[in-house]
Every structure is written in C-alpha cells, then in structure tokens.
Figure 1 (cartoon, helix red, strand yellow):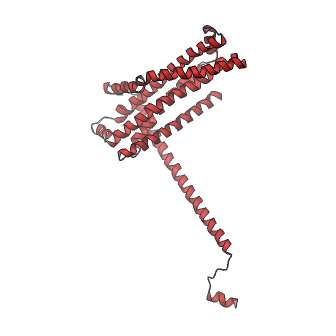
Figure 2: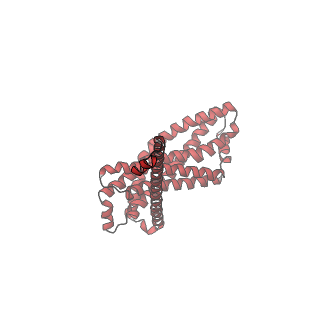
Figure 3: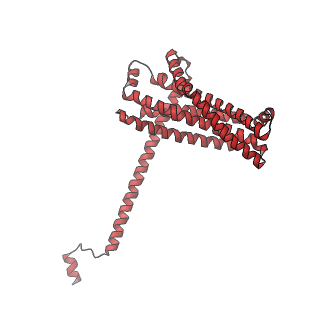
Length: 294
C-alpha cells in the first residue's frame, strides 16, 4: 500500500509542517544576515575609498600651503576676506559669549572650591581643564558651526554653477585660489579666538579668586602658571592647528567632491559635511586626551 502511494506520488512530502516553517524561517534569517553583511561591506568599502580620496586631497592642499609663490595678491585678498567673515564679523558676539560663559562657570567652580576646601586645586582646574580642554573645544565648535557650514555651502554652490570649472578652464587652480586661503584663515582665526578666550578666562578667574577666595592677583597668577607646563602649551597649539585645518578642509572636501546636480542637493551636502566635521572634532579631542594622559 505505502509502496503504491510513493510510486504514484514520488515527491509527496510527509514532513511536519512546523519543521517546514522552521526551515523556511532559517532560510530567511540566513538571507537577511547575508544582505546585512553585504551592505556593511559596501559601506566599509565606500568609506575606505572616500578616506583614500580625502587623504590625497589633504596632502595636495598641504603641499600647496607650503609654496610661498602661491600667495599672490588674489590669494591674499581671499584670505583676508575669509578672516573678516570668520573672525571680525562675530568678534563682539564671541566676546560676549566668552565673558558670560567664563563668569558663569568660573563663579560656580571657585565657589565650590571654597566650600570643599580645595583651594590648592584651583590652578589644576583652571589650567588643566578649562584652558587646555574646554576653551579650545568651545572655540572650535563656535567657528565650525558658523564658518564650516558657510564654506561647505559656498563651495557646493560654486560647483553647481560650474564656477570651479570656469576657474580651471582659465588655468586657475581652485586648490590655490579657493581652498588654501580658507584653510589658512580658519587656522589663524581658531588660534586667535582661543588666545582671546583664554585671556578672558584668566582675567575673570583672577577676579573671582580675589572676591571669593581672597587671593591676590600675583598669587593667583603664580598658582596658574605653576599648574601649566610647556607641554600643555604645545599640545593646545598643535590641537588648534589640527582643528583649524579640518574645520576648513572637511567642508571644502564635501562641497567639492560630493556629486551635486541641482540646488536642492546642497543642504544634504552641507548636513553630511557638518556631521563628518563634528565626528572628526570628537576624534581629535579624544586622541589629544589620550596623548595628554599617557
């Protein structure tokens, strides 16, 4: 009887339906896992290729920055105008922000130091935390969110309108004329603003130390200077140079290399550029902390 049934229906499946469902679910799970791995691999490959292109472009910009013959009158005009837009236009708001922030933060810190009897840690907190870490980071974020987005949008608009191709057609290198002046000006502005921010922090800290802790200005200055080392100055200066380079370079690279065919693509390019910029700032700050405490 059973031999007859299997001879008539050789493909008759008498397995448990639950087992068939389990096999089907297992196949779908394997397919989903395979698709996920393929997508992750594609993302990694694209990021790696993009990183190689960005590295080559960064090396090219650094090479052009070293050539003094590139700094003709036209390049100097672009550099000066970028300094004007980046620094001078926001100088007053930056000073107001620095004074308010320093007064608020230092007032709380000095008051808590007095309450906890930790006056001997005043210099370490002011020099080691605020001067070395907080002041550079706030300065970079303020300039990045204003000038970084503006540079990204400007380069993207120039690309959409084929202005960069026009420069190349007339034999003008956009790296020399457009990119290098912006990178140098942003580096200069970040260093200048951090120095200004640090001076404000030092002066307001002196006022609060005198008013709350009763420290004379000379005593406060000695405590501050004894708590900071030359290596801290070198670390801050090097970090500011790296910050300044990438605050200008990443928006330029995103605006210049991302495929933009119409004006509606510009906000997407700016958004992607700012996300990459803030991630880079976070990575640089993390690396500086590791180097400092090794």
